Image 1 (cartoon, rainbow, N blue to C red):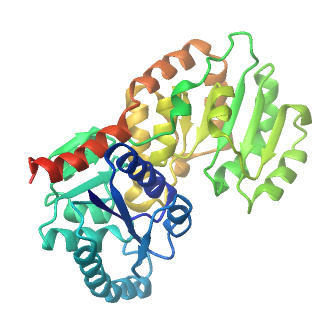
Image 2: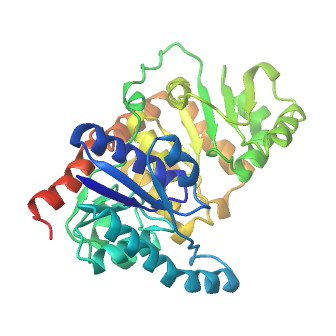
Length: 361
């Protein structure tokens, strides 16, 4: 079996894509070819995972300048032709589009060639590429029920998440409260700015509380300096540029303050962790807000919009949650109920079923 996986750009697209590729290779003996762009994370992560990667040149259309949009529109026809040639040479049984820059041209070429296609959509509101081809694909694997209306033959499978997130040890009832501040691998400027300002009064209000803050490499030094200037007790907070072993960091936390990218939301659900989510307002199509709304409406998280955020509001919400263990436990149970431990297996099985039985086509 030959499978082509197209797209990427961000970790939220490419990390699940590599997990799907691993499942297809290990359980189904598939040969997998990735199609991506030089600017996306796939250019680093796919070769590291041991898969061949073919590159096309195409950029963004959403939330960009007119010059960038014009350049992308000029690149698209060439990208489409390149993808068609790659697919004709590789002759895949199924083409999986994971969203991102390369997904549109590759899935468009696959549809023109009459190849079985599977769209993977991690967000509650699909990206532009998946919205354009959603009603024409053979089937779609989605993370949120809200995305179903954009696709034909859509199934809620969830997002592939590392097994370790599902196996976290429970927090001891006697352990002091712990807050994990996580802005993603690059950090979140708003969290790096506002958390040091409220650290001292928050630590005073919540007995025994400790804070672990991932600030991102570019902002770690300034964030550390801001905490040091805050007069917050130095033995009750830590700032790191990057945190490794995230399952262990999640396990230690009673509450997670974070953005709401698709992968983060899926990891929170898998870990059963209560969260206070502040969506990144510049995310394409405002998809982070829509992701956070799903958890908030279910009762697994609290959402604050950055446009409304103040020091007082964030401090009060954090204090309210951290001082209410019962509320945190209810949020935890609800979050775990939104998890999909068999997501990778389901998505791989859909890809196999599309080409083997043609039942979706």
